[in-house]
Image (cartoon, rainbow, N blue to C red; front, side, top):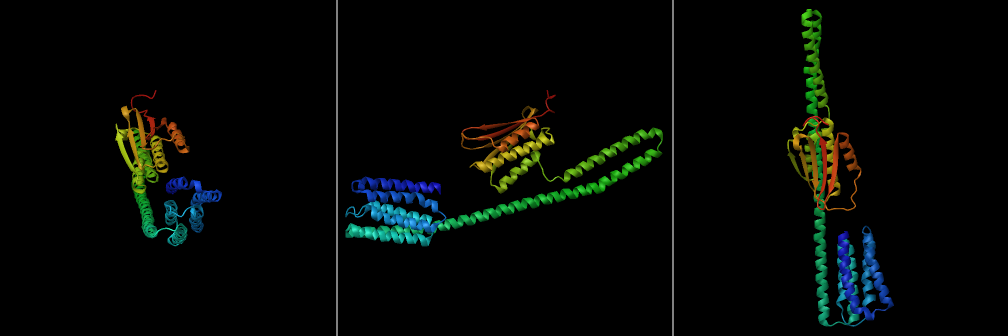
Length: 379
């Protein structure tokens, strides 16, 4: 809307400059006041976007002002008032509904009739004016019909798109719920079958140890300890099945899939130098997941581009590095917000660093985490 307003304003400025250049010697204080009032109305019309009745009255007032400003300056038919009135009619058709725009057009036609009476034009000029306004009104009304159809189609498409996204979100939630239910079922099966059998095995080992010979007690104790370890690992596996949130590198892949489905983002994801084999701790993996999630969320909020690049790499096996790159125009007033500061603090807690590289045509977020298990000791 802002762009359209400045287009209308630019056209008015050109037409009014040419009109002033021609009629300047004949403009008195009253007509100059009328010009000032007309320009004031031109600037305040967009302020009443939601009040179309006031806009209708303002357009009608502008049409009547053209008579006061330009006539009777001379008896010749000048093209500039006609151009100005044509602009008013076009703006009315653009901003208003069919009924209200017809009211403005009727006032304009009445103003044209007054102008023609005061100008005493020839028959040729009368025919030309009649043909011009007829074609202008038909073209404007046809444009209004096409514009309204396009607007309805756009609103319908937006509603369908929102419904599509809602169904995709619902499908994703149902898929996650089904996966979680399956994990819970597997966890219960492990707990009820393997866990109970291992518990029974422990009791049997303890009962056998009490009756076993002294030389066999050490072996029975080791077997019991092995069974206890197996039971504890089984319990940990069952607890992991109950976790709802998936972080780490697997979570990043699911996040990318979700953004591509729901938000129509194009994300180029690449893995280099054995990044998936890097020995990251659970806390480090989750910090990477949150950092990439925050970077992609910032792209959705602040960037006009819907394309991003995500790179994972572990060069030399000593560090893990991720980069999130987005094509963006440079903003010299850029400052790190709460999200980037929180991302930096989260990476620093797991021994990592964060870099923000804001160049002319791209925005880059780079995170680095040192891998203590590769390449010797962590001196």
